[in-house]
Length: 455
Image (cartoon, rainbow, N blue to C red; front, side, top):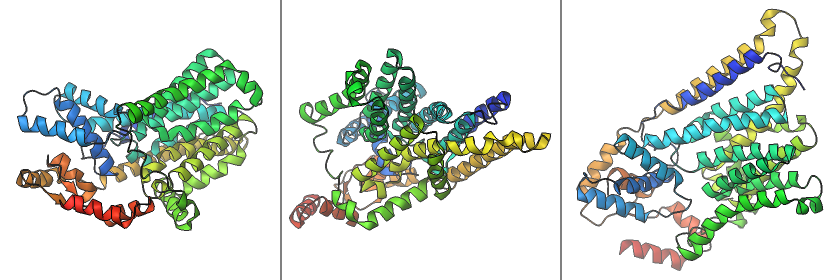
């Protein structure tokens, strides 16, 4: 169905470029503020690893700093492949110093570039109007602006997820080996970066692959090629990390809590996280867009990514209600889902009036919404300033570095470790003890932990 912007190609191109520029520009604001805005524990974990990699190449720093950087990096548990950490360390080498803002720059580049995949997929599911609305939502949702540039694997994971959706959908349309391999490689990379994304890929993939029937799907060599390319990288990494190198052997603890499926309070926490990240308007727009989709493949695909989100939330039932960045993939789901609203609202706009003012009103309204989204993102990024934090922790670290210390501090002692160059032992808080109880640890296990920390 042709829409408003399909019939105004110049306005279409202007708005597309405008969205990409402002989506990129807002993420450059407040770039050098310390990464303490969203889950500092997770961001400083990656920062410590990147610093350790960087100091492997530094020869003109004090010996104690080189030694401490290496020791701290080794203390950090390797969960996902340290891709962003390695890239950031290379950035440190290129810029001649430990500039942690490089990680923000990289994450935001990944996110904004993947916006083109979101736009292209939404355009295929609806039309150009839907593609632009999906892109605008993806780039300018307030929480997404902030979280998409964090020092953690999630922005890269979501970016590859969006690209994988787009490549897979094209493969199902064209059924060529070129697109089968492309879809498989990108999907494999997404799961390799962080395997929790598998839910968002598996559910829509299965629904689309089974369109001609399960027997035809099993006989299709391209289907098997996509499956192998999708699964092999993460499977190989998991086998190596669990059974050969051993660094993943403890990383599956405290992950899945089926008992939370039957607790109403858990779903309340989940819903609150959605409201705090996506917001009620975006949620309602995403839900309202689903019944407006064309039946067949577009409807199946969008229902598939929603099903993936639900399975993801049930699997990580504790984290989905306590860790806001677990909602980051859902922003892409909502962006795609709300695309049909623009298709329906703008497709008949030309029939309302022939006056020039009304003819260009949708374009003017879109520009104003982009500017409003940019300003809202600017306010989000500038509302907090953490530049005074490093000096405080460095002073504290200098005073305590030569002593054995246990502390109850922000972020499990990560601020002291990163900015103070002193990895203290962490005294567990009440939330940590509750989490252990939920995981089936008895009081004896908890007392043993406390006694170990005291010793």
